[in-house]
Image (cartoon, rainbow, N blue to C red; front, side, top):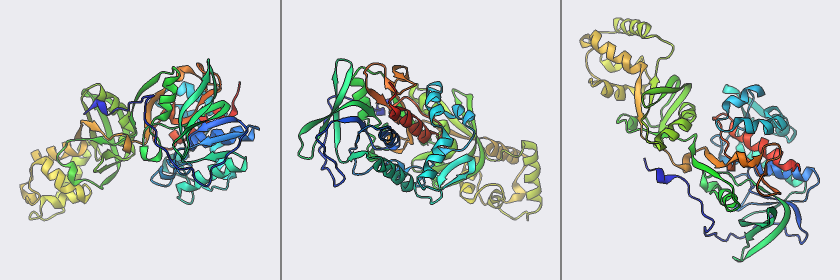
Amino acid sequence: MNPSRGFEYSAKSDYLCFPINRYSVYDTDSYDVIVIGAGAAGMMAAGTAARNGKKVLVIEKMEKAGRKIRITGKGRCNLTNARPPEEFASQVRTNAEFFATAFAEFNNRATIRFFERQGVKLDVERGDRVFPRSGKAWDVANALEAWCLDNSVEFRFNTRVTGLLTLGNKIFGVRYMNRRGFERKEEARQVIIATGGVSYPATGSTGDGYTFAADLGHTIEPLRPSLTPLISPHPQLRDLHGLLLRNVRATLFIDNEPVREEFGEIGFSERGIEGAIALRMSRDAVDALIDERRVKIVLDLKPALTPEILRERIHREIAGMPEEEFFAELMRKLVPKPMVMPLCRELDIQSKTYLKKIDDRLIGRLITVLKGFVLPVTDYAPFEYAVVTAGGVCCDEINRHTMESLKIKGLYFAGEVLDLDANTGGYNLQIAFSTGRLAGMLKQ
């Protein structure tokens, strides 16, 4: 693993010029609020501020709003989770107490009501995950944008903010790059940074907000991928790409000590070990790998069966098969077909070994593998494949009742740019909606 793959931010970054598109709005009057970033948190903040009578401009460097929303949840957008609000804190991995204030102002039930009022019909699926009934993530993004426009929010797309304007410890606007490559400024009494993290950088999340915050004296907690695939050198995994295992139990070990157990789905691809189980475990695994600790995942492929009951089942299966049948046929009764050959290699046995040659010693080894398939983890997928960014603007430097900076008056933060992240299942988008709503209220 190469720790240098962590994100680095610099105030001296070069900024590219993007042409401004037909949605651009120019106005000679100053704005009350400028929101940097037209993602989930930014649009929620902008719409909220506009509904409260503020003149709001959203500046977005991409060509349209909600780029990351449109691809989240594999294009379906798991926009929140319907579990009881009092259980939410257990799913927030960092600064849960800080987030609790924003969540109390705008919780998951409020999010569900909000989108239903915008005409987005919702369904609650397994694990209490909430999706648009259409199965289309862009319905969520479009609803947020339409709500903003209905409340007279002005958008300026294909425009990149290059810095913040301050006087003493007060904000008074932003600098941005126009289409001719010249830097211009726009003034506002309040600025909300909602630029996201550095995960999925192709959607525009390239860490600009960290640079702005650091330039003004904010502490940036170390950035690393979270909810990201884990990489194992196990030789059998190359034959498991595309396989999704359901109803398995996985235990994460760090330095041979069990630290986390999960039940559910785990999958394998060219990116690594993924699926809900691996993504939830990745937060702890990534931190351990950065600290150069030993990490492994142990899979119980038959969690409903004790070793004794599994042994009885194997004997029963063998008794019902001809002695001339191959070992591979027994394996097909126990595991999905794609796992047959990899497990045969793991057991160091030929798949065409006759069942009559299978003894108790081999059955014991088979049970050990089925109940404890060991996958050493030596690396993790980079930010390009991470669902969210762990780390960010230090929450101790933010007023949790307003989302305003404690260092710069009039500067607010919302969403993934903050040192807030949660488990997979709709929780991270809820963080964006809750903090965006609170920031947009612009409490003084």
